[in-house]
Length: 423
Image (cartoon, rainbow, N blue to C red; front, top):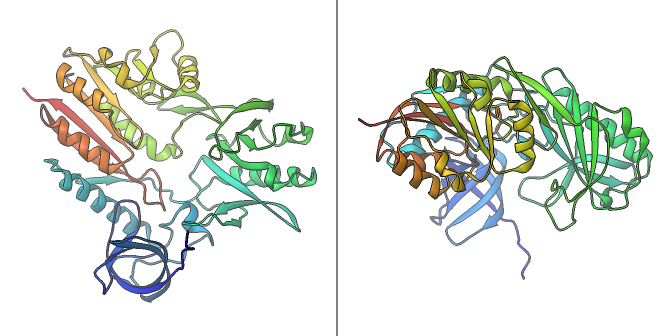
């Protein structure tokens, strides 16, 4: 296979698109999808990928700059938070535009008129994942350069909570002092509670990695996992050993929610609270069935009576049962295999918070057959969100539609819709 040869092009950026890149048209007619750009800018970029109808790349020189452009805080900002190069005001404006473009393209009858965002745009993430790099100076934390398999040394990220980066560097130093090879390591994942407690998981390719007692006091809990070298970086194959307790607890709308370093849990609780308050208002006085419930952080915090929680991941189910206590019903099943639990009475609502793929087709079909009185749909992907809303509008009216910025300085967009059964 011929080795890809990067090329240099110049282009004017028309707009930002879902995914975070800017788009423009080359003289050849090809579309260009480019990182590190803003609408209206004329840039010179280097290609990272080339197809018959488009090229992708990263802007190297900004020839005509947007007034919204800022100097990024991190050298490697494109790896973690590629929208650091614009004002926060511009970021929220562009996210609302991208969300509404997705809704209009899908034929949804309503667009979002409101976009809510937290005050804090830096040091908000309660979870980070770092890779490792080894050289003559020893072991270092690292991140992958966007669009490549190359790594670059880092000390942390300006979107991570400081406690996370402090702990990550301590772990790296301990492993360095133990002469651990970077080639034996895959990644380290760290989580931090609102109180500042940190737990970590180290993923290694070495099934015989020794037990390093120095890790015992580095934070609240550290787990060391063997991860099959053929699997992605942070996939757990087998636990090697654990120090301390890798469980954290945060209070959400006054409800204590337990989770651990491996759980799915929202990374920005300030933003999450904004959405939960709207959900709680929408389901007031109603019973709640929470599909795709994770550890129960939505259903258990917004429902007035014990909710029904449905979750496919066994690990999250165990956490949900701990959080629910004796009250809520926790069902271990994929949502598409648990559609019989969709309520059909006037006093219950269904909450959907699916992964990026959106609602499974079987869930959409069952919802339109059973017709629950009210639906609340929280989405992390405007494209699948728009697709699903368009289908649900067969029988439902959109009572409200709001955008949220759960991930400042990144292109990711969250959206919430409340749907009411049409009379």
